[in-house]
Image: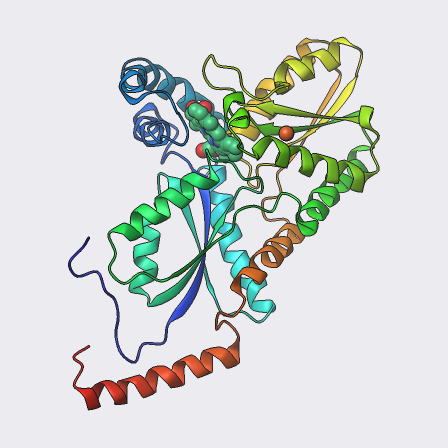
Length: 365
Ligand SMILES: C=CC1=C(C)c2cc3[nH]c(cc4nc(cc5[nH]c(cc1n2)c(C)c5CCC(=O)O)C(CCC(=O)O)=C4C)c(C)c3C=C
Ligand SMILES: [Fe+2]
Ligand SMILES: [Fe+2]
């Protein structure tokens, strides 16, 4: 534990912050930048559960040298002037969420952090502490809970606070896969797409995959993806044969959740489906997995298999209904914390009183 980690000061009014944590992304679309990012990501025991010694060898001798180059080329295809789409969207969402919570009467700081890469969870939490933040609400950017993602954020947060003497009050949002506002924002984005492009024959809802073993060991991710899909299909009035739920981004040789997105979409084309619309409801920001894997690779496979029209429906990103939903998701977790104007005035008055009292009892800080 750090010997002098306390940021406590008499007379400093304590603050509340929401930390929107997303997966993370490399600093540049180059093999050099991919290597440390992939190393950090793929060394996480929540992500890869293979025994450490064997995995150390596979990761360092096979995966990092080859995948860093391959993935860099894919990132280069989606990189923007502002940077990696995932980071750009997540940072904007944090800024906007602060405004949406402000409109609902909450004076809270909202910052973005990344589980892997920058801005690192630990750096962000340190900075909040320096700013006098005494209450922290962690909001993972994943609607569906998975041990591989959500729990890994929890690990990063608890590892950080292991070194800290004076820890803040902490809260953690587990999931919001069935939240009405989230489903409504998805429904609205599909309706908008259909308004502009007419309605499609078949809607594919593609979620990031995880190893099938995690489902058998009790990870609720698979069920949460299916619940999101069912609620979304109900809200759109879709019949069972008008949509599919698939899983993408398989990594390695083991079986992952099925059906896989690419072969499913190829099969649709081969069986005569002329047009597919694809949405990725588990991704709240566009990223490599949506812009490259779906909108470039899967699109090409569909067309090659005889499909005629491939429509990718973007992630929620900075959509207004989505940000309203995020504020609604966050708000109940702020309950009983002093975030309103009146409550903050009380906190400031108490802080001022504590200075007077500290002088009386001879406290130094
Ligand atoms: C190795 C196993 C992986 C598991 C398990 C996994 C789960 C998982 N991932 C996301 C969301 C994202 N993953 C992204 C990229 C990405 N994912 C893996 C591997 C696993 N993911 C790798 C190696 C990569 C890096 C790129 C590559 O080399 O393929 C991204 C995109 C990041 C970006 O910068 O744009 C997201 C988002 C979820 C939701 C999930 C489990 C539910
Ligand atoms: Fe992933
Ligand atoms: Fe299930």
